[in-house]
Structures are given as structure tokens and as C-alpha cells.
Image (cartoon, rainbow, N blue to C red; front, top):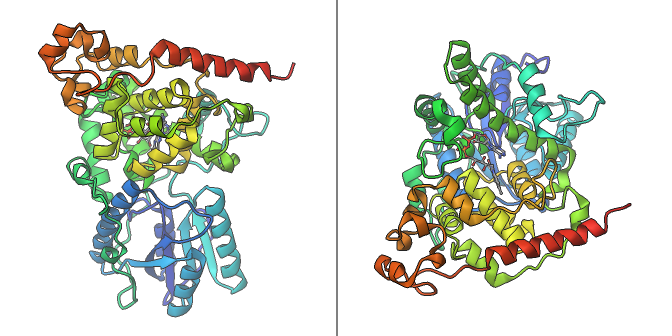
Length: 489
Ligand SMILES: Cc1cc2nc3c(=O)[nH]c(=O)nc-3n(C[C@H](O)[C@H](O)[C@H](O)COP(=O)(O)OP(=O)(O)OC[C@H]3O[C@@H](n4cnc5c(N)ncnc54)[C@H](O)[C@@H]3O)c2cc1C
């Protein structure tokens, strides 16, 4: 426990849940239980000029996740109170309405969120009420692990080494046995209209996802049973169902804690799991998420601004119709189009393919990374302020520890290497399914007879490439050269 907890028996205490929509292993809830107070779980659909609204796919997820949480709370005798509005005002209104002794919550790390929470803490303290915050979304707070010179890590590998050496997961926080809140008014989640309607593009989401805490725990178990062993080699294969864990949306909404994952995986390692290399590789990916939060915490502007400000003078060439072709999966590069369609249909895209599509957009098409980030924000069920900004800036070359700008992914060889059998492209671009493997990732190189046999007419049934690969690569390198020329001597 991080704070000295007061005795609040006979009183009411609010736990404001945000991106930690779970009852198990939730430090804020466990601490609230320790006080002896009646616990009221609150969720606020925040309306605040400085907060970035959730994207459509995230709202789809939130709808289901809250319904699942509502049922978990009610199975413990309580009621999840859902309200909408300015977060500080909504919380303070509820505090007054039920005469609560205070509010506990799990920390968040964006600038606007920290300002809102800091202000609320002050208001509560001024009223003589308790306000405590806890680590619920990360393994460690972004300010705790420092370099030998006392700064924060800007390079992943030494950060990962430091976490691996010094992090020890605390014992799991017990889930509450009993919760309160009956008789308090709240909104019906159904009335918030979070499920998309215009259009409802979410029908493919149901097949893939089970939002909520039970769904998260089940997905972790499935991955431990089926995916962890081969993770190191399979994690780059978009065609495999269990090549990666699929835990990202559950983590993004805090339906499972990274500590729960850490404990489960290290326990396997400690019990002689033979493929410990794979297990550590998996944990290192979980720590990429932590690293993104370290960067976001210390550079709150990086969701919109270049981490490396040399990129401020990048000669981007924004172009609405090219952006739209990319968004719709109509670039003429099969691996890119497969990824963009997977994203639209399922709300998720494989990490390898995210890098390929982001590279095509920011390098071949010289589109500002912010345009791609915004599309991902709207369409990913795992849209996360830290990981999304870092992923885009890493690929674009403007981020910390970024992929060098001159490393332009080749969408043809990337497809051939990571979707060797073509299963992924055939699934998401069925109009190409009849092409032989040899031509699947570069249909324009097939001769007329092969195309005809496969029922492919370039420019009609499937687009011609949006830009020639060599030309796109050359343009990107020339743009990069203009930045190099501005480099101080
Ligand atoms: C352009 C771009 C945008 C991205 N946007 C997001 C985003 O909005 N939200 C998001 O969660 N991830 C994002 N990522 C990172 C990564 O693609 C996803 O976390 C991963 O694909 C999720 O699938 P998984 O859960 O099966 O991952 P696994 O391989 O099973 O990894 C386990 C967990 O580790 C974390 N993780 C893995 N890779 C990364 C990474 N590169 N960076 C940060 N965390 C990672 C995730 O929480 C993931 O659930 C982005 C990557 C790129 C290149």
C-alpha cells in the first residue's frame, strides 16, 4: 500500500475508475477496502475541453467493458455509478451528494489528465477530505526508474535491462468482497450511445473480442497455454491467430494489470518453463508499453508534436485522397491493404503490419505522422495515448530511440518475409486470393495471363500501387536530406 490509510468505518469512499476497469489487482480498490468504508465505484464519461475524446472503436470497447464491470460490481452487492460531464465537477457533486469521506483513484499520465486530477486532489484536501492516488495502470511509475545520471531513460534496451533487474511485482491486491452504491443515481450505459451507429462498422469486433475483466483473464490464459512458447519466433507472423497475446485493448482499458501478466509469466519461468527466452521477449514487449509512458510523462506534448524537433521542418506532402486510399486499404500494396482492412474490421492490427503501414504513410507518401496517429486513435480498440504516439513517432523517425529515418520499410519484401504463405493477405484481400504466392505481394509484376487466371484486373478489381516503391523511397530520402542539411555543425 502506498499511503497511510485512515479508518473510515461507517463512511462512504468513492473509487473513481478510469483506465483501470477491473476489480482484481486494483490497488485503489484494495486500499479503499482497507479503510473499512463502504466503497462506491464511479465511472465518469469525461467532457472537458482539454481532454482528447475516445475514438469510435474505443467507445465500442468502453460500452462492453463498462457493462461487464457493472455486472461484476453488482455481483458483490454494489452498483457501478456512471455519470457524464466535467470530471472534477461530477466527482465533487457525488462527494457532496453522498457525503463521501473522499476519493481514491489510479494514476494517469497525460498532461490534461494530470492537471484535472491534481486540481481535484487540491479541492478535496481543501475541504478536509481524503484523496489518494495509486499505481494501477503500470508496473512502475514513470519517474521511479532513473539512469545513473538521474534522468529518465530515452533508449529502450537499457530501460528494459533496468526494469528486468529491479522490478518485483507486489503480491496481488485482493478483489473486494462487498461493494456499495445501491440507491445512488447514475446514468444507464445504454443511454450513452457508445456503440457506433452511423455507420456501425463493428460487426467484426464481436468475433474477436470479449471486453471486460473475465475476457482479459481468459485471453491471458489462452496465450499462456497456446502462444507464449513460440512467441519469440511467432510474434512477427500476422497470419497466426495466437502469435501474439491480443492483450492490448484489455491493457489499454485496465481490465488486466501489467503486474498480473508479469506475475503469471515469471511464475512460469521460475517453475522451469523451457522457452524462457520467449517469455522474457514477451515481457520486454509489455515493458515497451511502460517505456512509452515514461516518454509521455516526461514529454506530454508528444501526442501531437515531434519528440525530435528537427522534424518540425520536414517537407511533408499531405494529400487527402492518398490518405483516404491508405485508410480504406486501397494502396495497391497487399500487405498494407490487408493491415488497414484488418484494422477496420476488427479494431486491431498486428504490430509488424502497423510498422509497415505507418512507414508507407510517413515515408513513401510523406504524410505527417499525426494523420496516421489520428486514424489509429479512431479505429483501434487498443488506442493508447502513449503507445500510439510512440509507435507513430518511432516509425516516422521523429521519436526517442526511433527507427532511423533512412530505414524505409519495403512493403513488398516485408510481405514476402512475414506473410510467406500469403495467408494474411488472402484473408483480408480476397480479390487477390487466386494469385500464386510468387506474385501475391507485388501483383503488378505478374504477367497478363497470370492475372487473368486469378481474376485480377489491376486498376479495377485491385488498385495499382499508390506510388512506385523505389520512387517513394527516393522521395523520402530526399526529404530526410533536407533535414540533415539543417543540422547544426
Ligand atoms: C504505428 C503504431 C501504433 C501503435 N499504436 C498502439 C496503440 O495505440 N495502443 C497499443 O497498445 N499499442 C500500440 N502499438 C504497439 C503494438 O503494435 C501493440 O501494442 C500490439 O500490436 C498489441 O498486440 P498484442 O497485445 O497482441 O501484443 P503482444 O505482442 O502480445 O504484446 C503484449 C503487450 O505488450 C505491449 N506492447 C507490445 N508491443 C508494443 C509496442 N511496440 N509499443 C508499446 N507497447 C507494446 C502491449 O500492451 C501488448 O498488449 C502501436 C505500434 C505502432 C507501430
